[in-house]
Structure formats: C-alpha cells, structure tokens
Length: 306
Image (cartoon, rainbow, N blue to C red; front, side, top):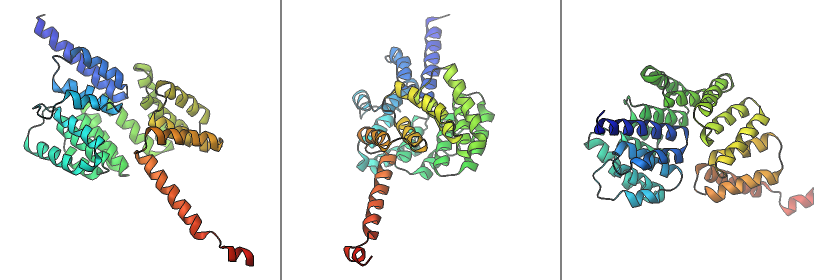
C-alpha cells in the first residue's frame, strides 16, 4: 500500500468516526478524531470539529481559526458562529449564506447545512426546509425531519424518514431520525425509540443526547424511576446539559418534588442558557401570569363588601 493510499484511508476513517461522534452528541470525541488530522484535513472533516465547537459553546475557536477571507466552505461555519453571537446581524448573515448557496456548487454540503442551521436558530423552519429541499444527503434530510417535527408535521417527517431508509437504513442518522419521529408519535411508538437509543449507548457510549432520548421515553410511559436514573447519569456526563435540566424539571413536576428542587434546575437553566427558547418562553408565560393575577385581583373595596 502506498503512503498516499494509507493517508486516504486514515482520513476516511477519521471522517467516519468524527461524523458519527458528532451525530450521537459526543462532541469532544468528534473533535479528538479530527485534531490529529487538522494540518492536512479537508473542509468536510474539519467541519465536524467546528460544528462540535459550536455545540459546546466554543465558537471563539472558529473565529480564531477561520479567517474572513478564507475561500473554503468553512467560512459558512464562521458565519454561523457570528449569527449565534450577534443575533442582530442574522438577516445580514443569512443574505450572505443564501447568496452563496444560490451561486456556487456545494460539494461538501457545508453551505446548505450552515444556512439551514441559522434559519432554524432564528425560528424560520420553513425557510430552512426550502434550503434543504430535494437533497439526498442524509444530513440535510435529518435536519429537514427536525424542522418538520418543530412545525408539527409528523406525517411529512415520517415520509422523509422512509426515504432515508431507502438510501441507508442502518445509517446512524437514519436510525436517529426514526427515533425522533417515534417520540413525536407518542406512547405507542416510544418503545421503538428507546431500543434505538439503547443500542447506540451500547454500541458507542452514552451521551447526554442519547440518555435524554431514553429519558423522554421513560417519562412518556410513566417510568419515572428509570427516567431519573438515566437523567442523573446524563448530569454526570455534563452537569449543566440543557435538555437534561429541562427533563429534570419535568420529572420533578410529575413526581411531586419540592418547589425548591424545581427552582434549582430552573435557576441553572437561567444561568447557563439565558437566551434559550425554553427560558425566554417560560419567562414570558410567567410575566403574563403575574399580569393576569394583578388584573383579576379583587380591589380593597370588593374585599370590604365581601
């Protein structure tokens, strides 16, 4: 075997491993597969390292590594980071991204995925679907499934998963997309999702993403002790994991835990994820509840007449 053939095999192996670790939520694992190849790696392999940095809130590394004048598709990930850091520039950055998608061939699919991620971050799921529409790339299809589920179109998500199965039934993303749809369908299908998450935990390693998938199944089937066990395991993997803290709040409500316990998880969410959809939405609901309480609070005159 020539040295160039050996190098190609090493790169392909690193790409497979980095991609797979990213899919199951082992972001540091993905980064560690890419780092040894960083000096010679192509854009596709490097993209999983930078996507993983985004996932663990280390986007500043992207700003440092990927310069504004780069001619590689990795520029798209720098723009994603800028959108996350400067929401006021989202419209401007989306214009740059969509112009690039429209004007150039995207052999690595990085520009399409990056553009769809920013649309999703801005809550524009329909526009994300337009960017991804018609692609036979499993990443684009999986992201489309997530968008459809956010839009409550489980029917269309099921159809898209069926197409993914035709392309590669055993692919990690196809299996995960099946689990997402099964969870969205409710209790009758939830056990199917559990088996997928359990298999991946055994095949690879438990990650907060996989453990939270299991926890949602347990919660849906009212298996609260099992849900608490996997959520506590998830907290040992990442003490401030966003999904885990939310699911611990839900579990605490369902099992009648003290207000102090629920408040503790809520304060952690507000501390670590102050701009998240969940925190913003719950704060709005809380403010609206307080407003309604004041509006319908009986006046002193009414109390006296009673």
